[in-house]
Length: 124
Image (spheres, rainbow, N blue to C red):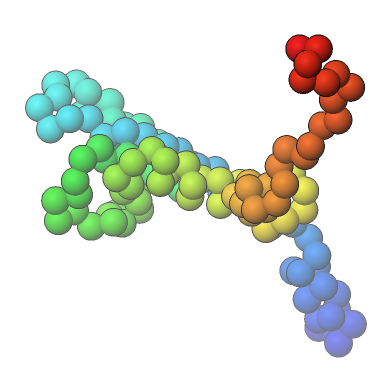
């Protein structure tokens, strides 16, 4: 490989957009759920792993000693927490690092600007 090819390869790595990993968000059934529900849940988890998705599992309630990551799946205590991670993995609509960065930049500035009103308060 020549020096020109190496430089071209480095430029392509930096400039070409990276592929985004799809996110599959599931909610773990209750511990007293039917066996059919657990079997369906396990099928969904295995199918998502086979596709190469990032598997986010919402486990409502306390983790109770459960590891945060386990066998290719990441557990979250709330859907909000899982949605934040999902937004951090989605592409930006404005050229930022991620959709989460877009949202944070909107929240930090003036999201709603002042609007001029032609009517005085007495007329209303």
